[in-house]
Length: 316
Image (cartoon, rainbow, N blue to C red; front, side, top):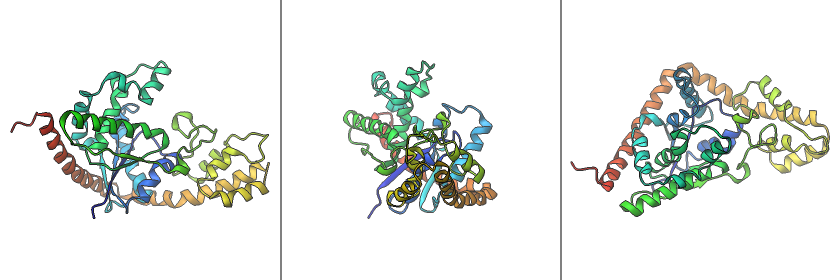
Protein backbone atom coordinates (compact mmCIF):
# COMPACT_ATOMS: atom_id res chain seq x y z
CA UNK A 1 0.00 0.00 0.00
CA UNK A 2 1.37 3.42 -1.00
CA UNK A 3 1.14 6.12 1.67
CA UNK A 4 -0.74 9.33 0.95
CA UNK A 5 1.49 12.36 0.39
CA UNK A 6 1.65 15.20 2.93
CA UNK A 7 3.48 18.47 2.26
CA UNK A 8 4.05 21.66 4.20
CA UNK A 9 6.71 24.28 4.81
CA UNK A 10 7.86 27.06 7.13
CA UNK A 11 9.41 30.38 6.14
CA UNK A 12 12.86 31.18 7.57
CA UNK A 13 11.72 34.63 8.65
CA UNK A 14 12.27 34.52 12.41
CA UNK A 15 11.96 32.44 15.57
CA UNK A 16 9.00 30.02 15.70
CA UNK A 17 6.51 30.38 18.53
CA UNK A 18 4.14 27.91 20.18
CA UNK A 19 1.38 29.11 17.83
CA UNK A 20 3.44 27.88 14.86
CA UNK A 21 4.01 24.60 16.68
CA UNK A 22 0.43 23.81 17.72
CA UNK A 23 -1.09 25.33 14.59
CA UNK A 24 0.96 23.28 12.10
CA UNK A 25 4.45 22.05 13.06
CA UNK A 26 3.20 19.52 15.64
CA UNK A 27 1.26 17.81 12.87
CA UNK A 28 4.45 17.37 10.83
CA UNK A 29 5.91 15.20 13.60
CA UNK A 30 2.66 13.47 14.60
CA UNK A 31 1.89 12.40 11.03
CA UNK A 32 5.35 11.39 9.80
CA UNK A 33 4.62 7.66 10.27
CA UNK A 34 1.24 7.79 8.54
CA UNK A 35 2.17 9.79 5.40
CA UNK A 36 4.90 10.14 2.83
CA UNK A 37 5.92 13.55 4.10
CA UNK A 38 7.70 16.41 2.31
CA UNK A 39 8.55 19.24 4.67
CA UNK A 40 10.43 22.18 3.21
CA UNK A 41 12.06 25.47 4.16
CA UNK A 42 10.20 28.17 2.22
CA UNK A 43 13.19 30.47 1.67
CA UNK A 44 11.92 32.12 -1.53
CA UNK A 45 8.65 32.96 0.23
CA UNK A 46 10.65 34.59 3.02
CA UNK A 47 12.15 37.13 0.59
CA UNK A 48 8.95 39.18 1.07
CA UNK A 49 10.04 40.14 4.54
CA UNK A 50 13.73 39.26 4.73
CA UNK A 51 16.26 40.80 2.35
CA UNK A 52 19.43 40.32 4.36
CA UNK A 53 21.60 37.45 2.99
CA UNK A 54 23.47 36.75 6.22
CA UNK A 55 20.26 36.62 8.21
CA UNK A 56 18.60 34.47 5.55
CA UNK A 57 21.38 31.86 5.71
CA UNK A 58 21.25 31.82 9.50
CA UNK A 59 17.45 31.50 9.52
CA UNK A 60 17.47 28.63 7.01
CA UNK A 61 19.73 26.64 9.33
CA UNK A 62 17.54 27.65 12.28
CA UNK A 63 14.41 26.22 10.62
CA UNK A 64 16.26 22.98 9.94
CA UNK A 65 17.24 22.84 13.63
CA UNK A 66 13.62 23.56 14.58
CA UNK A 67 12.35 20.71 12.39
CA UNK A 68 14.73 18.20 13.93
CA UNK A 69 14.16 19.45 17.48
CA UNK A 70 10.38 18.97 17.27
CA UNK A 71 10.99 15.34 16.36
CA UNK A 72 11.06 15.13 12.58
CA UNK A 73 13.11 12.10 11.53
CA UNK A 74 15.00 12.71 8.29
CA UNK A 75 14.81 8.95 7.57
CA UNK A 76 11.01 9.14 7.54
CA UNK A 77 10.48 12.68 6.20
CA UNK A 78 11.98 14.38 3.14
CA UNK A 79 13.40 17.67 4.40
CA UNK A 80 14.42 20.13 1.69
CA UNK A 81 14.95 23.77 0.80
CA UNK A 82 12.53 25.37 -1.67
CA UNK A 83 15.24 27.24 -3.58
CA UNK A 84 17.07 23.98 -4.33
CA UNK A 85 14.17 22.92 -6.55
CA UNK A 86 13.95 25.31 -9.53
CA UNK A 87 10.75 23.59 -10.68
CA UNK A 88 8.83 25.48 -7.95
CA UNK A 89 9.41 28.86 -9.58
CA UNK A 90 9.05 27.45 -13.12
CA UNK A 91 5.63 26.03 -12.34
CA UNK A 92 4.61 29.23 -10.54
CA UNK A 93 5.18 31.14 -13.81
CA UNK A 94 3.00 28.70 -15.75
CA UNK A 95 0.28 29.16 -13.12
CA UNK A 96 0.66 32.96 -13.43
CA UNK A 97 -0.28 32.70 -17.10
CA UNK A 98 -3.64 31.02 -16.38
CA UNK A 99 -4.59 33.11 -13.33
CA UNK A 100 -6.42 36.43 -13.43
CA UNK A 101 -5.61 39.50 -11.36
CA UNK A 102 -9.14 39.75 -9.86
CA UNK A 103 -8.75 36.17 -8.60
CA UNK A 104 -5.46 36.95 -6.84
CA UNK A 105 -6.92 40.14 -5.41
CA UNK A 106 -9.07 37.90 -3.19
CA UNK A 107 -5.99 36.58 -1.35
CA UNK A 108 -5.86 37.53 2.34
CA UNK A 109 -2.26 38.84 2.28
CA UNK A 110 -3.02 41.14 -0.67
CA UNK A 111 -6.25 42.43 0.87
CA UNK A 112 -4.50 43.01 4.19
CA UNK A 113 -1.64 44.96 2.53
CA UNK A 114 -4.14 46.98 0.50
CA UNK A 115 -6.24 47.78 3.57
CA UNK A 116 -3.11 49.08 5.32
CA UNK A 117 -2.28 51.18 2.25
CA UNK A 118 1.08 49.47 1.82
CA UNK A 119 3.12 49.60 -1.37
CA UNK A 120 2.53 46.08 -2.71
CA UNK A 121 5.33 44.23 -4.50
CA UNK A 122 4.62 41.69 -7.24
CA UNK A 123 5.78 38.86 -4.96
CA UNK A 124 3.15 39.72 -2.35
CA UNK A 125 0.52 39.81 -5.08
CA UNK A 126 1.28 36.49 -6.77
CA UNK A 127 2.85 34.44 -3.98
CA UNK A 128 -0.26 32.17 -3.89
CA UNK A 129 0.89 30.85 -7.28
CA UNK A 130 4.30 29.91 -5.88
CA UNK A 131 2.52 28.26 -2.97
CA UNK A 132 0.26 26.37 -5.38
CA UNK A 133 3.38 25.16 -7.21
CA UNK A 134 4.96 24.09 -3.89
CA UNK A 135 1.94 21.94 -3.15
CA UNK A 136 1.05 20.54 -6.57
CA UNK A 137 4.52 19.47 -7.75
CA UNK A 138 4.56 16.50 -5.37
CA UNK A 139 1.10 15.03 -6.10
CA UNK A 140 0.18 16.13 -2.58
CA UNK A 141 -2.90 14.66 -0.90
CA UNK A 142 -2.85 16.67 2.35
CA UNK A 143 -1.45 20.00 3.53
CA UNK A 144 -1.40 20.54 7.32
CA UNK A 145 -2.16 24.21 8.02
CA UNK A 146 -3.56 26.54 10.64
CA UNK A 147 -7.16 27.66 10.10
CA UNK A 148 -6.00 31.05 8.77
CA UNK A 149 -3.94 29.31 6.05
CA UNK A 150 -6.86 27.32 4.62
CA UNK A 151 -7.23 29.73 1.69
CA UNK A 152 -3.78 28.76 0.35
CA UNK A 153 -4.90 25.17 -0.13
CA UNK A 154 -8.16 26.32 -1.72
CA UNK A 155 -6.18 28.43 -4.22
CA UNK A 156 -3.95 25.43 -5.01
CA UNK A 157 -7.06 23.32 -5.64
CA UNK A 158 -8.62 25.98 -7.89
CA UNK A 159 -5.36 26.31 -9.82
CA UNK A 160 -5.02 22.55 -10.25
CA UNK A 161 -8.60 22.33 -11.49
CA UNK A 162 -8.11 25.20 -13.93
CA UNK A 163 -4.90 23.70 -15.32
CA UNK A 164 -6.57 20.28 -15.64
CA UNK A 165 -9.50 21.83 -17.52
CA UNK A 166 -7.21 23.62 -19.99
CA UNK A 167 -4.43 21.08 -20.52
CA UNK A 168 -5.87 17.75 -19.36
CA UNK A 169 -5.75 15.77 -16.13
CA UNK A 170 -2.37 16.52 -14.49
CA UNK A 171 -2.75 17.48 -10.84
CA UNK A 172 -4.39 15.98 -7.78
CA UNK A 173 -6.70 18.25 -5.80
CA UNK A 174 -5.08 18.51 -2.33
CA UNK A 175 -7.00 18.72 0.94
CA UNK A 176 -6.17 20.89 3.95
CA UNK A 177 -5.56 19.22 7.30
CA UNK A 178 -6.51 21.32 10.34
CA UNK A 179 -6.47 20.19 13.97
CA UNK A 180 -9.82 21.50 15.21
CA UNK A 181 -8.75 21.92 18.85
CA UNK A 182 -5.91 24.27 17.95
CA UNK A 183 -7.19 25.83 14.76
CA UNK A 184 -6.14 29.31 15.95
CA UNK A 185 -3.64 29.64 18.81
CA UNK A 186 -4.22 32.72 21.03
CA UNK A 187 -1.41 35.11 21.86
CA UNK A 188 -0.57 36.78 25.17
CA UNK A 189 -3.01 39.61 24.34
CA UNK A 190 -5.91 37.35 23.30
CA UNK A 191 -5.50 37.99 19.57
CA UNK A 192 -4.11 35.31 17.26
CA UNK A 193 -0.50 34.57 18.22
CA UNK A 194 1.65 36.36 15.66
CA UNK A 195 5.15 37.84 15.46
CA UNK A 196 3.62 40.95 13.87
CA UNK A 197 1.50 41.51 17.01
CA UNK A 198 4.44 40.92 19.39
CA UNK A 199 2.27 38.56 21.46
CA UNK A 200 4.18 35.29 21.10
CA UNK A 201 5.78 32.69 23.35
CA UNK A 202 8.89 31.43 21.51
CA UNK A 203 8.94 27.67 20.93
CA UNK A 204 12.48 27.21 22.28
CA UNK A 205 12.40 29.94 24.92
CA UNK A 206 14.62 29.74 28.01
CA UNK A 207 12.89 29.67 31.40
CA UNK A 208 13.22 33.39 32.13
CA UNK A 209 11.80 34.27 28.71
CA UNK A 210 8.83 31.93 29.28
CA UNK A 211 8.24 33.62 32.64
CA UNK A 212 8.36 37.11 31.13
CA UNK A 213 5.91 36.16 28.33
CA UNK A 214 3.41 34.46 30.64
CA UNK A 215 3.44 37.28 33.15
CA UNK A 216 2.59 39.66 30.29
CA UNK A 217 -0.59 37.75 29.36
CA UNK A 218 -3.52 40.18 29.43
CA UNK A 219 -6.17 39.39 32.06
CA UNK A 220 -9.53 40.98 32.73
CA UNK A 221 -10.20 41.77 36.40
CA UNK A 222 -13.88 40.88 35.94
CA UNK A 223 -13.07 37.29 34.98
CA UNK A 224 -13.12 34.44 37.47
CA UNK A 225 -11.13 32.32 35.02
CA UNK A 226 -8.62 34.40 33.00
CA UNK A 227 -9.56 33.34 29.47
CA UNK A 228 -6.25 34.24 27.78
CA UNK A 229 -4.19 32.32 30.34
CA UNK A 230 -6.60 29.38 30.15
CA UNK A 231 -6.62 29.31 26.32
CA UNK A 232 -2.82 28.95 26.19
CA UNK A 233 -2.79 26.46 29.06
CA UNK A 234 -5.40 24.38 27.28
CA UNK A 235 -2.82 23.60 24.58
CA UNK A 236 -0.82 21.70 27.20
CA UNK A 237 -3.52 20.11 29.36
CA UNK A 238 -7.06 18.84 28.59
CA UNK A 239 -10.10 20.80 29.77
CA UNK A 240 -11.22 18.09 32.22
CA UNK A 241 -7.92 18.52 34.05
CA UNK A 242 -7.66 22.30 33.76
CA UNK A 243 -11.19 23.45 34.62
CA UNK A 244 -11.24 22.13 38.20
CA UNK A 245 -7.80 23.71 38.76
CA UNK A 246 -8.89 27.10 37.40
CA UNK A 247 -12.19 27.01 39.28
CA UNK A 248 -10.39 26.24 42.54
CA UNK A 249 -8.08 29.22 41.96
CA UNK A 250 -10.64 31.66 40.55
CA UNK A 251 -9.29 35.22 40.66
CA UNK A 252 -5.77 34.05 41.62
CA UNK A 253 -4.20 35.11 38.35
CA UNK A 254 -0.60 35.13 39.56
CA UNK A 255 -0.84 31.54 40.85
CA UNK A 256 -2.43 30.34 37.61
CA UNK A 257 0.27 32.06 35.56
CA UNK A 258 2.96 30.43 37.71
CA UNK A 259 1.47 26.99 37.03
CA UNK A 260 1.37 27.79 33.31
CA UNK A 261 5.05 28.85 33.42
CA UNK A 262 6.03 25.49 34.95
CA UNK A 263 3.94 23.54 32.43
CA UNK A 264 5.42 25.46 29.51
CA UNK A 265 8.93 24.84 30.83
CA UNK A 266 8.24 21.07 31.09
CA UNK A 267 6.93 21.12 27.53
CA UNK A 268 9.64 23.31 25.95
CA UNK A 269 12.78 22.15 27.82
CA UNK A 270 13.24 18.73 26.12
CA UNK A 271 12.91 20.25 22.62
CA UNK A 272 15.17 23.16 23.59
CA UNK A 273 17.91 20.79 24.78
CA UNK A 274 17.56 18.56 21.72
CA UNK A 275 17.97 21.61 19.50
CA UNK A 276 21.18 22.58 21.29
CA UNK A 277 22.56 19.08 20.64
CA UNK A 278 21.78 19.26 16.92
CA UNK A 279 23.39 22.69 16.77
CA UNK A 280 26.76 21.14 17.60
CA UNK A 281 27.05 19.54 14.14
CA UNK A 282 25.74 21.92 11.46
CA UNK A 283 27.72 20.28 8.56
CA UNK A 284 25.90 17.00 9.23
CA UNK A 285 22.54 18.79 9.18
CA UNK A 286 23.35 20.48 5.86
CA UNK A 287 24.08 17.04 4.36
CA UNK A 288 20.63 15.89 5.50
CA UNK A 289 19.04 18.95 3.85
CA UNK A 290 21.03 18.48 0.63
CA UNK A 291 20.10 14.79 0.43
CA UNK A 292 16.43 15.62 0.97
CA UNK A 293 16.67 18.22 -1.79
CA UNK A 294 18.09 15.63 -4.19
CA UNK A 295 15.14 13.31 -3.51
CA UNK A 296 12.59 16.13 -3.90
CA UNK A 297 14.32 17.31 -7.09
CA UNK A 298 13.83 13.90 -8.76
CA UNK A 299 10.09 13.96 -8.04
CA UNK A 300 9.64 17.61 -9.03
CA UNK A 301 11.71 17.16 -12.19
CA UNK A 302 9.65 14.17 -13.31
CA UNK A 303 6.39 16.05 -12.69
CA UNK A 304 7.73 19.09 -14.54
CA UNK A 305 8.51 16.96 -17.61
CA UNK A 306 4.86 15.91 -17.69
CA UNK A 307 3.73 19.55 -17.29
CA UNK A 308 6.01 20.79 -20.10
CA UNK A 309 4.56 18.10 -22.36
CA UNK A 310 1.01 19.14 -21.41
CA UNK A 311 1.55 22.85 -22.14
CA UNK A 312 3.35 22.09 -25.42
CA UNK A 313 6.87 23.43 -24.79
CA UNK A 314 8.55 20.03 -24.82
CA UNK A 315 9.55 19.37 -28.45
CA UNK A 316 12.63 17.15 -28.09
